[in-house]
Image 1 (cartoon, rainbow, N blue to C red):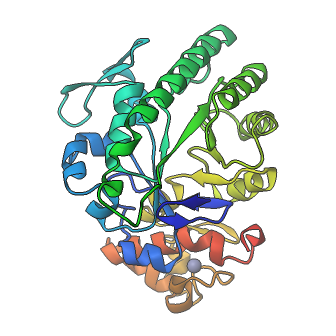
Image 2: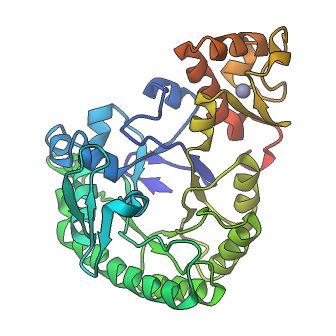
Length: 346
Ligand SMILES: [Zn+2]
């Protein structure tokens, strides 16, 4: 993908930087492990420090000193996770902040405006993430509303896309714009997924995401839905499965033809002492590693595995030292590129 801030090779796993930071990882280390694109979450940034503040500071790239590519979500998924704190209507979603209970409203129009002002290279249409399980009837009406919201997202984008902070007065980015991706929904119903994919492609986006997966369904069903949708998405456009997954899923879905994935698992697991290795998951806090001088993953060539032992990482995790979280995170995020078991990524 040729994005304004970076060229990104696919398939790509995108580390999640919820609050303008990939938790525990300074930007220069992300660069060193060759991360080309990271995620930001519109919902969190909208609440703190506020979209207007970030826009005034020159956009999200400049604010967090990240000069490579970035993708923001629409805020929809986070808002739908609020359950009791939200009210959905045709117009959009009214929700209460998880921080202070204040009331806010998110719609296709103001989600797109917020994402334009944050300035990520790829921004996402505002959709409704259908809950699971959902009846065919419920999943259809949710899918129909998402299709109407995609159209409104696209219209809002076309009207405001020249307001991206980094294009204003900049020669470097002359003629470059953000890319707005559409999102396929349809619950766990193959016929609806198929229809959603076709009608989303009719709306014509530069890339397509598959949303509403990994919401509690079996892994078999996730795979089935991905396969159904991929059949109807153009092969020459990026295809992105949102919120997925474990390393073995990443490899599996990449083999099916998925180009982009993101998930909090590698970073969240790392903070809890869980290492993802070529031999499976390793709880580094386990007593058996107390005297273990081996590298965390002997098949991994990341800088953590080249330098430190299991015994040392265990000690850091047991004592709650911040360095432990950083080293675990660095290894978990390096995995696809540095692990010989993941040959797909070479
Ligand atoms: Zn490693």
